[in-house]
Image (cartoon, rainbow over all chains, first blue to last red; front, side):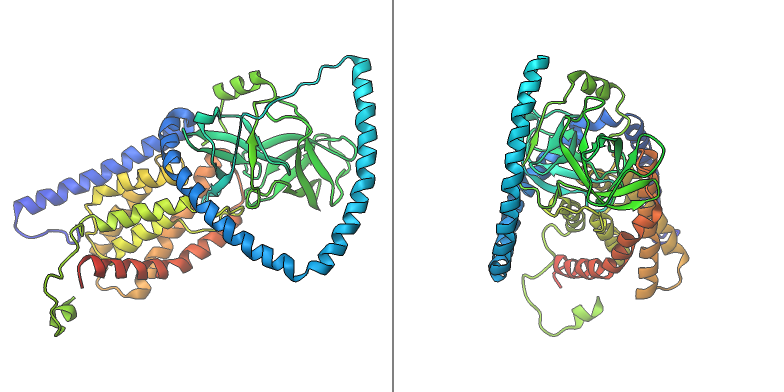
Length: 291
Length: 173
């Protein structure tokens, strides 16, 4: 289609015309699919899952390589300033031991109180464990590729956490891999509270790796830099008492926090069943957040 | 390239690659597959590799592939990068059309004009991504898209260079 007429050949002219029509058809099909995937995000779940099955294992394999290289580099780095690190670790350990004794006492007390109240402890076993092996590069959304999929029992909507804290929740599932909506995505909203005083807050992603935390009640800004935010379990999707983020700085009535589970350095993450299974069913029916 | 034909050393049995017709499309798919790289980005400042390679090819030649191939290539990109399905299909097809129109209008072109066209297209791509993200509930300010927009624009010459090398290789020059 470089020039208006490719010459006197009828065949070439028709070919040009039909390729023009084909491109127009491509645009229309694309727009229709885009509208469908915005209105009904689950429509292409299977297709996206199949694509994940192609990329997931590749990413997993490459991840091993980069992790080894990264480990070598940081290993050498640690060796370099071993002395100062050693002193720091010793100090930290002493402080930790004191805290641990306190925590043990509190745990005992908690058990007694629970026994007195006859509360039943809800325990959830992990459904699957895996690695975060990739992420969205370019889009304003924050997704990550997770190395466990439907074969391991992972389903859409399940929360993902690492030892450090909450990572996000599953939005696409393939057989071998799945896609996580990270807590730093703009559409991710985690009901949470301040660890220091239990004030209920909402943690919404900013899309750039940070999280915006807002108090539910209007009033004085309750945050201080360094505050820990833990999930509250409200809504039933995320389990309670999972660390979510640490406040970095204040901004008006809100605060900007950094997720504790950094997907870039998280080695293992586990998928848990939703805290309240009914919440996931409701989520499945009216999922407007997933793409 | 006439120069290549004039060069004295003739290597026998050295012609276009057997898959020369499909190499451009394959490189676009490979660029989309870069999304499988185990890089975990918390800010999303990487360029849209698939689109960069697509416009690099299309700016280099008018016929890297039949124009309608843009739609299936876009579908592959959507599936691998996690964009909403249909986004790249529509955008890539429209890009082919727009570049055809630009080809008709421009009297001459040089490197700077190509970079400018690519800049406009990349900016359009980022802006549309931002709009679509807003539609699906992620209303972030557009200023957050600026770093990746700049990085993509700066990455275009690199992608254009790689594509021109691949083009020479596939044509056996």
